[in-house]
Image (cartoon, rainbow, N blue to C red):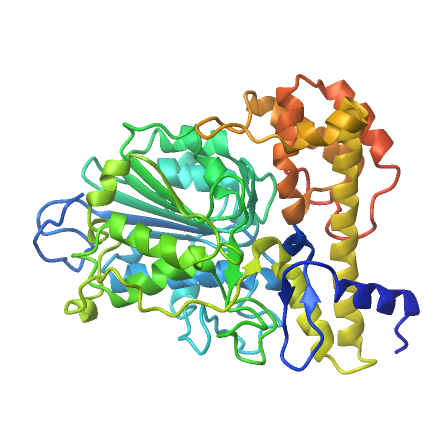
Length: 489
């Protein structure tokens, strides 16, 4: 098959984009767009997942918010977390899994039916197929909220399992996916907005929430008050990306047959720590500090600032209360120094899809359908990015003028303040933008702060509609911009 000169030129240009390179041994590197810019309580753990000291039942809600093979790592994270919960003594009836389930048996997966979360790691998918509760079209915001609240009547599809917790129970919630300021991705629209999540959490106390996503701090910043008995940690602060790890080109990287990132930096950090330590003697605070150090990767060039929110005093509690502990680790007491190896680099979450398409392209046989497909996927993703970036920038200029437009869009509120004053306005303007310019999709979530700032400036729906129509004369003909699956708000 002949590769068109313009496509080749685009690929070659991309391989030399400025800022932080990704090096592939023996090949030209790909430079990515985003790179340019409680105390211990003694006692045993019973087989039913409860404490012998009547500390209640442990519940876990695990959610992977993406689909698509290029997002392999999110479902790998969730499957790894499931294995931790099982090894910790939680019963399946108390573990609720949300995952689209399109990875293990995906035609791109070099090991069908197997998912790994680190190079040459064990199969973390084992046992999950029989236990996952909400898959495919059932992975929705409404079902997630219904599960947390124990509201079976609000469920649509799935196993019907919910968190039926009592006053002495402990709830662990873990989410892994893409995100943006004030928003978290879901494989089915609409996305999950911070204000809605906080209102749900306020009704379900005694919980720990681990959150992996870009700008994940914005989900709790200025929104999650103390006094709710909720403790949360996030992969990043309110302004920065989170990072994928064990990606092609890294040391350590995935086995050579893999063309995707196997995990996420924050997620891998807390789970690999939990894999090897006695969690009866490790507190939430100790794990937070360890994960914070590892995720920062010592320089933040390939890492992020792990944050904590809510009832900070809860971090004195032992992890055992929430996720149990593997009896095999009884003699492995927590140590402050993290002996787990730091990665040489990491991949910005928003660039992991490009990493997959590029690695797929470079490995495919010249002239093969697979090479042509990878090229098409790469260029479609890039076209969508360019379209969204240009549209948001132009809308800012149309609404606020050439000089002030960029300033308004890039404004970051002081720490402790929520992203936006009127969340309904944010959702309305997101829908208004998408109606004229196409879906924001996983990449476009990075611009949620800009749209929030437009709301904070008092711009009305009609003004946003007019500016969006002027900015988006055409919409890229590709899956990323398509509104076939609905609006993200």
